[in-house]
Amino acid sequence: MTRRVLPYRVPSEDVVAAGPWRLVVEDGEVPLPEALPDWDYHMDLHVRRNLHIDLDQARRQSGLPQDASLLVSTVWTATGSNLSGPAQRMRLTGTGTATVEFDVLLRGTDLGGLLFLDAALVLGERRSDGHPSSPRRAGSVLWSDRAELRLQGDAPQFPMAVIDFARTSFPDDAAWHLQINGSMEHATMGALLLLVNERNATTATAFQNAARPRPIDRIVLSAVYADAARTMVEHALADDCFAEDADFPDGSLGATLLSLFDQLFPAQSITDVRLRQRQSPALFASDLQAAVRIFEVP
Image (cartoon, rainbow, N blue to C red; front, top):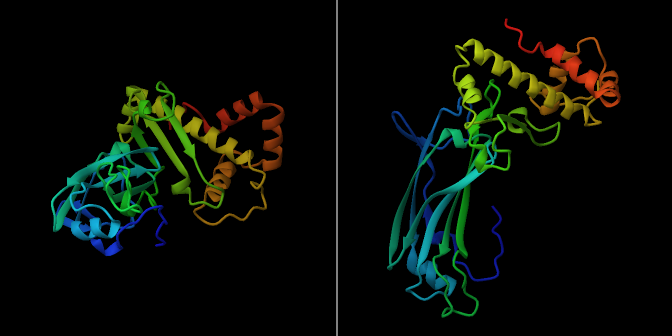
């Protein structure tokens, strides 16, 4: 990994002996995997990690006084839910080697997509009495690293997360939002995420009961899936590279959208449907509503 060049002195990487992140499971702990294909938003994640920090060398090599306060922290970021936050933070004083254990419990409803775990050793307070080239501002990064975990990366189910929309840029009162990121060549499971607003109890409950839905749950789920299909088809038609002769990789967003289009419009060409959508959007909306068979109980 290429180290970022900072405008102040930083210690060598070996002042922090960083152990690997470990996933806490029912039978103990396992090394953090690259992906959890069976994860869903009901599953909280419990992770741990040990750091051994040579405080004397960290200060000395950074040009800081030996009484300079340091902080070690870890921050989580989930690309699927657009949420992030501090997981744990500890102030380090004294001398010698400090041993720190991160013990972090993350709510499944806050997660989705790629989970990043960023750890950092930073200056804990503003200093003006160090070496001229030493860090001075509180929060100046002396050491950092990042771990990555893909959630639902290979799962067959539609990726989704239940979150509080008030903590995002989405309208507080919206019931759901289908997020589409990346190009047509991106993996579907990393490009699509259905976000359900936990404040909308009717919608959130419908997904909780999806295995055994009540009549009201069936209506809500039908509306969500119909709207998701509309969003996906409109996203596809807006991209000129989405065409009959396109050759998208297996498992890609483009391949998924082509498959969906063939299911909804089996006897029609992409060119014809795109033209109708642009010339008569109201008629296209009705065509799509009929194609997804909204509110039809199997």
